[in-house]
Image 1: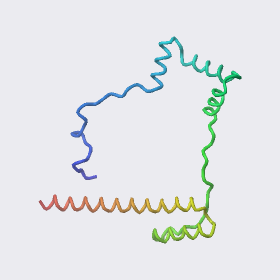
Image 2: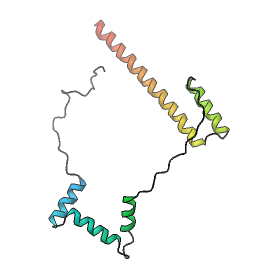
Image 3: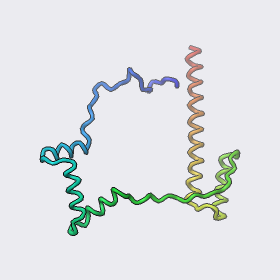
Image 4: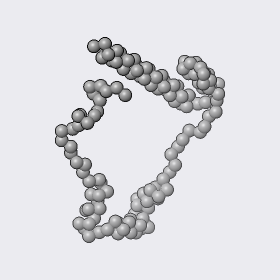
Length: 142
């Protein structure tokens, strides 16, 4: 990859590096130590509260942590997208699939957005390659 004036390298390092602070977990464990409590004691207390009939929150929270609800995902839709076709032809094919009820409109929209993203990536890659070639030509000719 060609170096540019904004490329990150060993000469372009921050003058002052600020150290990372403690994580939230470490801060909590330190606070527990100051109160002469342990992590195991915390979990014991959590379980005790979870089974307390007056506590309406802890049991539900503990259950959600142990067995989270599965994330909703779209079902699979099978349709024969012509792979060798041009992007606008693929988009037209997807629109026809939406119109004929083969795929729902939100899934079709995701597919068309994916095609657009691929076009943008190809365009960016092509422009970058062309700029690198121009820079090489200018630097070689100087």
